[in-house]
Amino acid sequence: MKGHDFRRWRKSLELSQKEAADALGLKRRVVQYYEKGERDGDPVKIPRTVRLACYAILSGVADYHGPEKDKKKDRDEEREPPAEKSEKKSKKKKKK
Image (cartoon, one colour):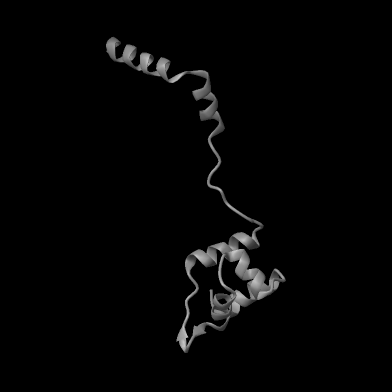
């Protein structure tokens, strides 16, 4: 992603530089550096994390709290207390 791509992303969502910065957890000045493609004459590379965050926001993801729990696994654990699990394991070992 180049500076002009970053600016096009922001404009496509109709975000101000401040709103884009807030959405990405950045300072407004950093957004300006990304759009310009340089800081004090040195090139600025947009980090992968920021590029991925741009994609997530574009896709409608407002926040991410990690993967959902495996509901089937959780139900199975609720049905069988841990003590019973260890008893079954020891019985299987004795049979072998």
